[in-house]
Image (cartoon, rainbow, N blue to C red; front, top):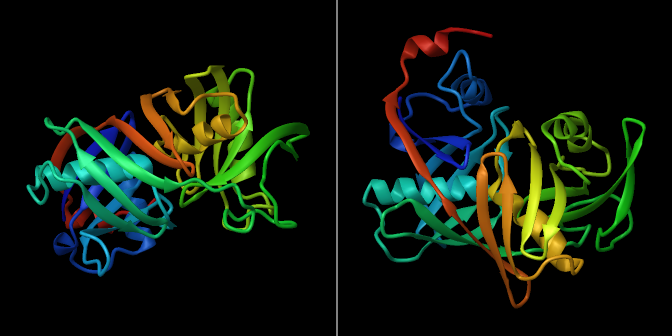
Length: 280
């Protein structure tokens, strides 16, 4: 099985073309591919380009546990760069269909920078979703592991819980992230971002991703930026700083988010049949 591997500020994905697959790309196969010791190792698999009736391309995003993700900002930037490397697109803007909606992408001249129009940000509990009466989920409290946390919930095509933190750390993400991900008030599970507002143009976050665990970066950090902007803590142009690097988020009228960030190609390779005969 041929593949290409990229990372977007430390968030790495394996890209596989549908024509490269022999057999079924089931959850067990995905888990093996993503395993850091027994497989190639990645934060997920991007399957595409697939045919789309409404867009130029369609993308399937798979978490390391084999589940489908609606949308991934870093994954979309990587997929755009892959299409550019394969000469399937050039400098023109193009559209990609995901489970979380349609996005518009544009690759910079040298391929290293990609802009993605992530779409409209929404705080409506019925659309995220978050259990309880319909509302905008802002500045609510939740008890986790004996502590009361303040959070907001938002969707940018996939669900996010943004937790306010005085000093976001990996330890905090690993402690609370897995518990928040599966909390009953989030029926579809949730991504979790621990956010500190540095100033009106900068945020610092740590990330726990649904189905993936602790990650160095998230293109869907659009969610944290959206919360900060919604609450009047930041302006419309925001740099989001993560352990893996930073991306820029801009909000336009109607709370539409535009994300710009780097992509780095790691390698092309071939997975052997022998790898899939192992177990872990």
